Image (cartoon, rainbow, N blue to C red; front, side):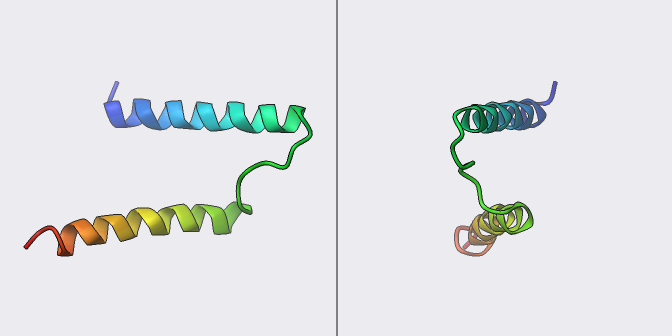
Length: 58
C-alpha cells in the first residue's frame, strides 16, 4: 500500500479512537467546528507548501 495512504488511514483511525475516548469520558471533543476546522488545517498545509515553493526554491 502507498505510504501516504497508510499514514492517512492511520491518522484517521487515531483521530476516531481519540474522539471515541473523549466522548466516552463525557469530555468536549478537542476539535474546532466541522468546516472551519477542516479549512484551518487545509490553510496551514497550503501555507507550508507556499513557503516551500517560494522561499526555499531560491
